[in-house]
Image (cartoon, rainbow, N blue to C red; front, side, top):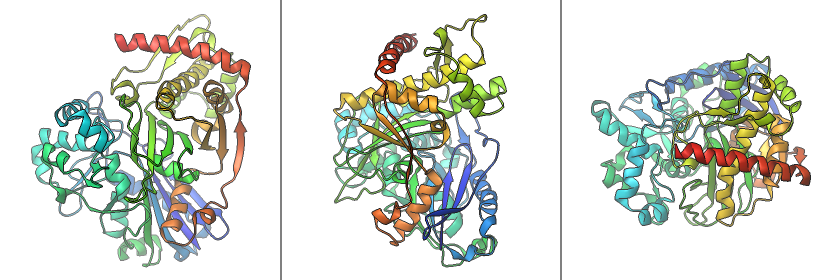
Length: 493
């Protein structure tokens, strides 16, 4: 029997067919092959059409099920992971009112900051755990204030994964984790924040039915089942944002466990069993996939917008033949890239920089000495330095990182990247045979009640480990100090 894992990313939608009895991937595909477009009508804006995601899913699905094209009736459950914080506004017929304002859009920063000041830091931090900042609630307030005609047509608001589940089933739901990632959830009152709703003038009727991540989120629509060759009994039994889901895919569910990812954005994600507040807001706290009102699990998220997208830019700019080639070239350059420093902050407002949009830049470029290989290494070093800058919030809040788990995917395919992160952080890096779509497929089996946690992850195996080297730790610590001094100067400009 099979479960289906769907990962709605910024660049593409990936689909995995997972044989949960043998713990083997039966089929896998993503669409489009070239990165999905992001609409940027103004500087700092970032939008995508929700129906692009749906069409990309349908095309990826058809490719993924080719190896089992005669057995699609054996797919029993669906799990969905999705890019966090995207605002999807639907009219009463379930059609998008406007394109989705996605996670890296910066237009609502000032609205969120004003809400933080008006609602008061005591309430915001102790009840919501985060400033409204640039999250979904502030984006909806932007629509309300700037597109009143469109806002009047909004019947429901949801997240990207909720929309894909709705297209599959005709039933619109969301999750506790999803409500918290939008900064709509009051962790003290254990429900949608009535104070925030009153402040922004939102009605609670705008939200779909709120369920846990591992739950029944609808049975597939008959027409869609016929189109996809699925049984009409298939259910969506798991939904989660990409970063909580990435942590789940790595079996990171309990206090002290830490996951990482480096796709379009880069994330360090730790778990606590207590409400966690970082007053500096370099890191943010949300309900994890296994959060319940009686047994809370809080995901502590450090997000850097410009990670894989910065590496992608370097490849496009130099017309490199492959990422593997770039990694090989970068390894031929020594630590420090011969004085070339890269700052990967070109993908919208960075939360860990106080929602500032400082832009991406290079410093120390020498036309006679630096080659594309230097750029490739400088980009990876700059991304790792950015990780370290944000990870200081963990140590400042007495969170001791010992091991970071990651899927062997995206930038973690680069040995140099892994060695840099391990040596600079002083932490072991462990890579596993998983990714977001596979995590969603496993989540579907857990949401259906088929397996215990131990059984769900019996096929998860460690592929590779990286451990710090004392000599390199010292060398990179000095290079990071130089990079950080330059960043602080950029922030002062």
